[in-house]
Image 1 (cartoon, rainbow, N blue to C red):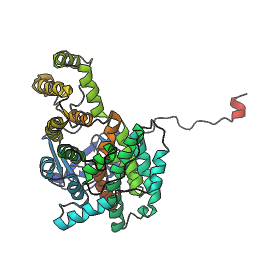
Image 2 (image 1 turned 135 degrees about the horizontal axis):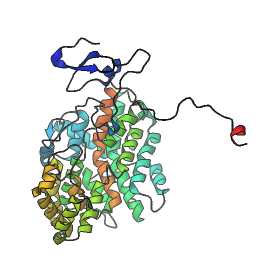
Image 3 (image 1 turned 60 degrees about the horizontal axis):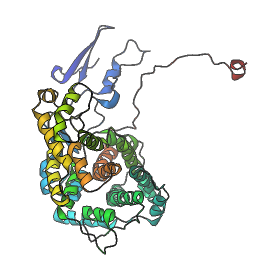
Image 4 (image 1 turned 120 degrees about the vertical axis):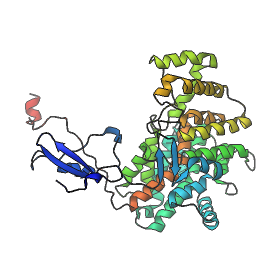
Length: 434
């Protein structure tokens, strides 16, 4: 039993024993270990919490990203996402996430130079990627090649050295577009395109994706800006599935390439990175604006699923969705209008006015419009998660770096509730099979 001031504590009475406990409240949370003192007797294990999916469990303290889902707020290091998307660029946001503050002109120029210098990969990485089957999924190729980088930079294991950590983070941010573009080209049977370091980060990525016989690929600036904004919007999102994977694997003190490859693997799953593809399938199935009312009725009756609406965190309009909606309009100025956009706009309008969806706080999320933009770029659906991973890399690395320097962190090792048999008598195979 602990002695804690009443205003800063939670008083718990164990009805099994009648014992009362005062548990400290800090930052609106209680320490799970403090529940361990609640037990029937000294021989019994202490109380633990059961929380599949970490629905209401904080695994860390972090200063990287702030989310208020009820108010629709997303901030990177305290800066609203709307301001960053409008006034910044992806590499500046990457610097902000990793270093915790905006760069000076000198710091920014040095940062851009470092990343530009490291966009090339070892030729053996190219050989490694060429070894995949012709129909290999680009995300699987990305996951494997990111993990493989750890073998090219064995010094990355020295995670206690700040300068070494910095170098690995620079390398990874620089090389992710190269690996992502090469996985795209591989699936198309086209030769890999080397980085063009005369171009900016996002323009260089588009060059590696789409360059053919021309001496220099120049993308429309509106497309470059739109993709750069998408990278910014995906750069971090608190303790989501893939970030949790990076932190969990990183807690073993493994190198950052291995930890980030775990994040890529988590993002590979359809419940995390594949939602925008599901939105496209839904819009194509609806077919036209005239079919929307019948589709809405189907959703209410439980016969259809409204994809791209609602979010585990946001109970308001996802702030990223508003920005992406504007980017979609800019992209379609270049590529031409996609008839699916008209369906999406009408579907959003109807859903936001319908009491059924308003009452359930179902608002468009980041996936509702992003798939339309990716399709306008002529990316196949299997590339959507690769684009997501490139944008998320600075966030993963910022979270990993924070983990490494957090003295409170331990190797991830959650408890379990055992539900199997106990104390069975083993019978030798010669007896069981006779």
